[in-house]
Image (cartoon, rainbow, N blue to C red; front, side):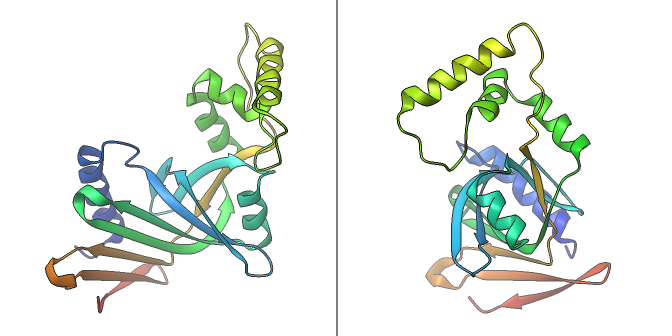
Length: 191
């Protein structure tokens, strides 16, 4: 298989059957304008030839880093399959229509939480956050919860995708795809 997206779809479908929790979890690595790295787990919410999508608060640290330095790396690790996939590439925001459509699928409490949270900022106490959540709940009681203007998504446009399969005695298999124009060049990497 020489199409990295078809291979991703195959591995992802297998992971959805074998991983007990959050088969769509991926580590997202970013760096600020000075090159200081940061990594955290986020959830994949869309993927295809146009990229890998996740959503967040644009006022938090990860969004700030992506806006300063619009490049990222992703890592999917599926321990049950002894596999991982690394993705690297530039990042850009998804359009408002896509962000609105995804936001509408979230649970009401998740929607309200997006309004109540000042993501990544210091929080004096859990009670402060829960009070803000209650205020937002009352504000939108009985109606739909619109997407906050500070909340949306990012899409990683893959320029490099590596598929790593564990093998006995650390003789792992590493297939590496590099974007070339409209296509992909495939090669192997030493384990």
